[in-house]
Length: 115
Image (cartoon, rainbow, N blue to C red; front, side, top):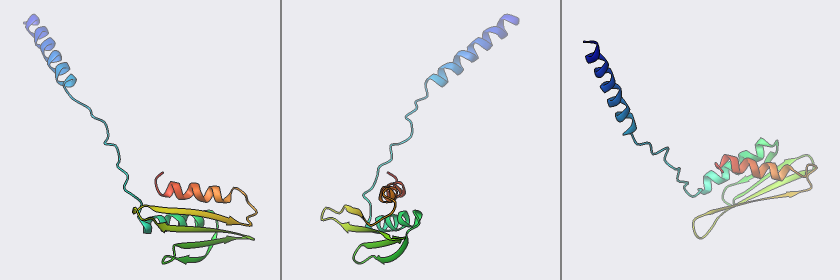
């Protein structure tokens, strides 16, 4: 009886090992990024500017222009729909006391866009 139980336990463990080794793991699917929409890009640009403490003085969706001011400086975002359907966002700064401000706004925009 003891030998029978040992053989049964050995057979069960071999069956379990074969079952586990037969499983396939394919990992997580690679995310497919869709082209950015104008609305999403416009909102991300405005939010990135607010995140850096800029007070938005112009937010004109029709022209794709956002102007944020902080102290003596200003940052302007231009959001443009390209002919191929992509969206181009450009940040320009005038007179900022903080030379790294535009870089932080740009990084904030990229972060909000999932880049």
